[in-house]
Image (tube, rainbow, N blue to C red):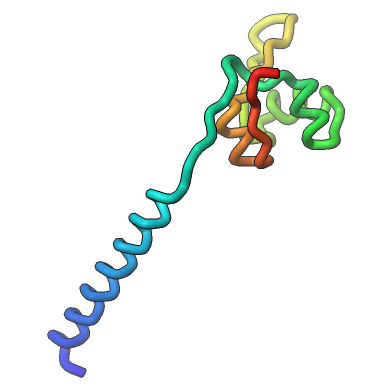
Length: 95
C-alpha cells in the first residue's frame, strides 16, 4: 500500500467515525432536573451510604459530583443534579 492510499483510507475511516459519533451524540439526551442541588439525604439513600459519607467525600474531593467548602463552621454541601446523574444514573426531579 502506498502512502497516498494509506492516507486516503485513514481519511475515509475518520469521516466514518465522525459520522457515527454525530449520530450517537444526537441520540443522547440529558434529562431535565429539578431546581437546586440534590440533598445529601437523597444522595445517601441513592448510593446506600450515610450522609456523613457523602459530606466527607464532597469535602475531600473523592466524590466528583459536588462540593462542600470548609470556609465556616457550618457545612453547606452542594450536589450538582447533572453530575450526580452522570455518576449514579439517578435523575433529581426536586422531590
